[in-house]
Amino acid sequence: MYAIEYTVEAEDDLAYFRAREQRIILAGIERQLRYEPTVETKNRFRRRFPDIAEWELRIGEFRVYYDVEKAVRVVSVERIGQKPDNELYLRGRRAGQS
View 1 (cartoon, helix red, strand yellow):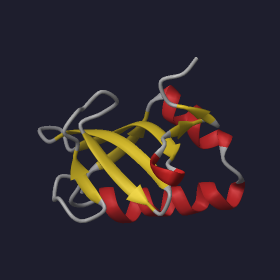
View 2 (view 1 turned 90 degrees about the vertical axis):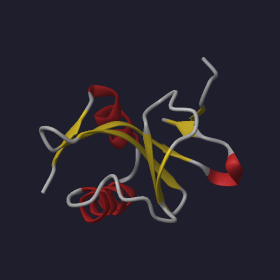
View 3 (view 1 turned 180 degrees about the vertical axis):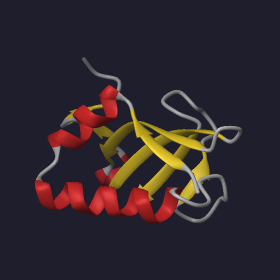
View 4 (view 1 turned 30 degrees about the horizontal axis):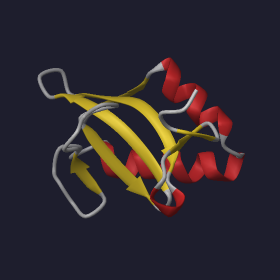
């Protein structure tokens, strides 16, 4: 079993969402990352361009970007965003814009 930690940025990202959305995101993180965070699936995969994090988890239109420390069995959630229409938004702003 892996411990799950959140960066300050990820905590701030999560706080941006409404309570219902937060529950969906947290349940998805728990279900998908607690036991096999490095097993690739349709919705959990290693990113080709790891600018935010090495791994990505899709939970509907939500995206969780995370890194894994296998030696100490820790998943570090780096960022949480939303990706409607193939554009990533972090806290309501399109990623890459100020």
